[in-house]
Image 1 (cartoon, rainbow, N blue to C red):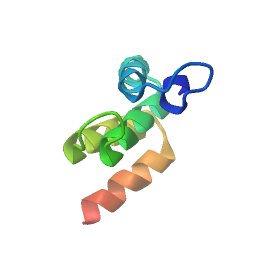
Image 2 (spheres, helix red, strand yellow):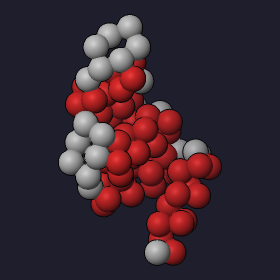
Image 3 (spheres, one colour):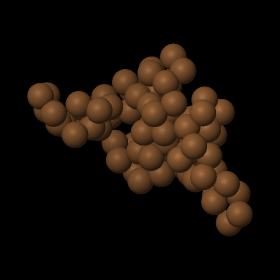
Image 4 (cartoon, rainbow, N blue to C red):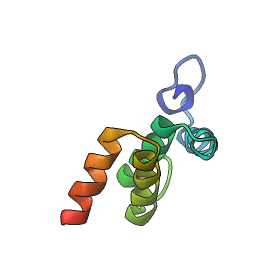
Length: 77
């Protein structure tokens, strides 16, 4: 989060993606959702809706309800 917003450190979106991905791999659902949002919004990475969906799906499986809603809405489109 600090790298994404530049809190106490220079803003570095690419580093934020790396750190969120690492935390997501460790089972942190909020990190999965955060990196999914970064891919969905092309923040620090090239927009990739398939990757965004994969991260949101993992966050949902880890119990993050907001991510589940995003996955459900995305599947309806």
